Image 1: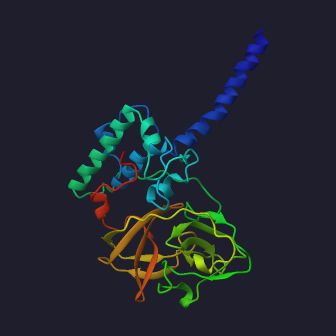
Image 2: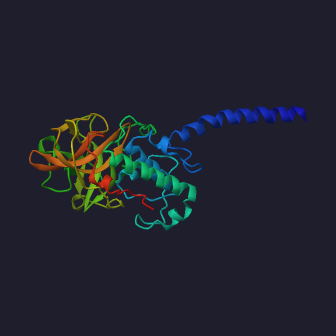
Image 3: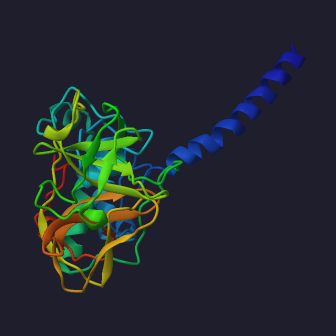
Length: 309
């Protein structure tokens, strides 16, 4: 009997040692791992960046399966987390199931986080020295999260534009083209245009752009309609606009400080990018700039976030 107890004890210790790193790894994928089990404090929340707190209070809703709008920054952040499972039975405008599951303690934490964010806005600070977001899970290709592989009919060469219009800027000297013989990843539809990521003909480069759905032969992918932020803001420090945040960061244009742009959303791979709309060579274009190069948006001032419960 003692021998069996010994083996059970040893087995328990081994199992515990095996599970501890896994649990620790899972906790590292949360911004505030225990925001569902204890009351947060005003002082500790001031240790985080303004933007980080946006995801922190939405993390509380995400634990309960809150379904974020496709393409929104919270959608892009939480879809990469292995613990997140959106409630597919509710629409992005009806979250009664989610809100019914949020505890009184959790709601108090949401309210306090929003209160601290409001104070930061009143002080016109992003709390830049505060804690940022945790490191996202690794992937083989450093493509932005939220893009999923789609099966398109082979043998097609589709024109790709930097915004959803045939009058928009087109990379590669106006010749950007996607071959459906290669891997194509898509995020969703923008008024009949598919936002997609593909490997460009030049080896080692990926591009994010738009393909007109009416030009695609065969069955169209079943994707959600994309929802953008749409706030007008300014570039704080001169930066490069790219349509390849996955590998090369190749420049579409250089944006000077003070340039007015439209903020659409934020996307994530091994870093954080802001996806914006601007003008390149006299034409509308969308692309990525490093997060932190834009001013606080009017949307932030109005507290337009997904989890407003």
